[in-house]
Length: 131
Ligand code: THU
Image 1 (cartoon, helix red, strand yellow):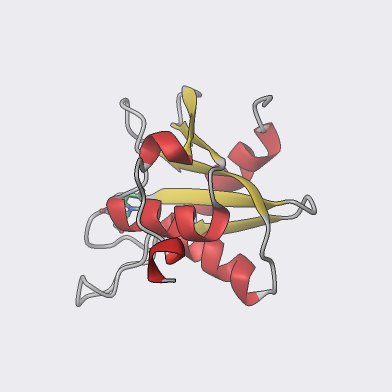
Image 2: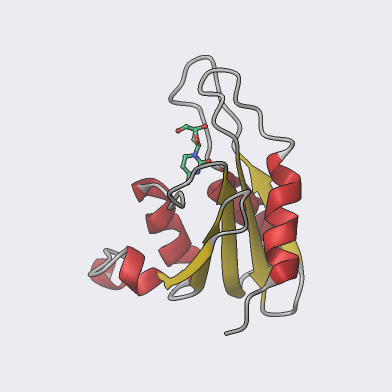
C-alpha cells in the first residue's frame, strides 16, 4: 500500500490537541474507513491516570460512535526518534475493530514504518474464542 500522506497529516494535526499534562507525551492517531473517511484522535489524560485514553482508541471510538464499522488503516504519530508503536491495550482494540490493517508509525522528523496488525499482535485473542 502507498504511504497514506493524508492520514499521517491528520494524525500530526490532531496531536496538537493532545491533553497530556501529566506525561507531556503527545500522540495523534488517524483511522481511515473503507468509505474513505478519516477519524482522528489524540491522547487524553486523567488526573486519576487510569482514566487516560490513548490517541488510537479515541480515533476508533469516535469512528464507531459515528456508525463506522469498516476500516482500512491507521496512522500514529509521536515525537520520538524511535517510532512509537501502539500500547498493548490499543493493539487489542485495533485488532478487534479494524482487523489486520496496516498501521503506519511516524514521528515529527518524517520517519515512518508500516506494519500489519498481525505483526503487532500475533495470535490475538478475539471474539472467535468466545463462540
Ligand atoms: N499513548 C498513546 O496515546 N498512544 C500510544 O501508542 C502510546 C501511549 C499515550 C497514553 C498517555 O497519555 C501517554 O501516551 C503516555 O503513556
